[in-house]
Image 1 (cartoon, helix red, strand yellow):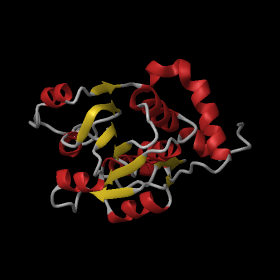
Image 2: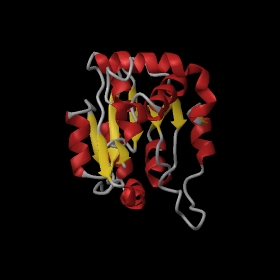
Image 3: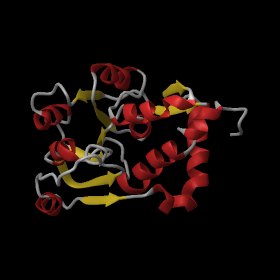
Length: 222
């Protein structure tokens, strides 16, 4: 696919680092299989929305965790997620995940860390795979946060938890872009962008990103 086949901004998102992170993180570490349950945190963001769609293309039941009712609606309507949870309004997130995933969680694509991930980990199945893409809920913490100790969960569930930096998988970029381009051309995947105009608005756009106000890729047009 060349620049005439897709919006130029898509090369900053679904055909760029965003899409590569979603595709390679899920395919190389998550190893999705038909009939499995995939949970995605930060599901309303640029990476999360793509992860969920790829999971659906591989026959997974996909559950997204996000931070607003508007994003819950978008995940299930535009992005074909089977179910979505607003973690800000869920009274008991661990129980909400259990209800949404009656057969447990086989793959957890972790974009956020913190208490959301604690709740998901409490629901993982034997041999679960856990790609760790980010920990945005913890980046601005000034004190070390205490949570459940992961080792007993990872041990008893024989789970695989692996963090990744997308640059480590650079040799796989061409094949990944080729597949993403084909899906995009065939309307099998879609994407959202939040476009902010003006150089002076870069700081606010960055703050809004951490506050979860973006829908998909946050792009500043200068």
